Image (cartoon, rainbow, N blue to C red; front, top):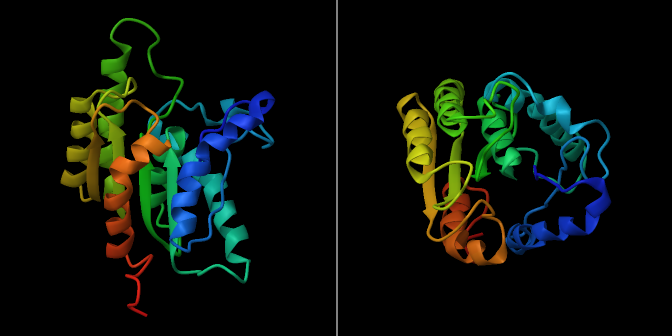
Length: 220
């Protein structure tokens, strides 16, 4: 699930071409899902602005569930080997989807997961308070998650400082979540561009292998 630009700037959607091509090269079918009110999607982005990170994430899961139903109706998909991946708000949606244990989903990839929600303070130490909410949310999501996840963040992400990212990850693991964390050096929030991809490609490839989404060449 990608965080697409406004409708008036559809050409910017090409920013996701690099990451799509990475998965296509591994022989995977790729469905690019835009959030409500973005790209050509109906609805409003405000639909996802709930009081807590959990509520915001679960609102996005509604659309992911419907996308899975649609993709499962296609003859060219493997009904038991789905991967959910997303960037920014989509990354948080991927973690929320993992906690929902959607049938056929084997693993998820969280690229710089973050989400906006109504309760987030808009002044003072809002970043500290918001990250505290995320840490608590990670504890809750982990408790109902059975699939593994890969977290990819940049060390210069303005949404979450490196220590906050590690705190979220530690909370997730302590409460039962199975995850691998990769923090990219000298990288900001955009962890899906071609430059960042060179830093995570090998780790992501090994993650897909470990979860049996792909297989080594010549192993079939």
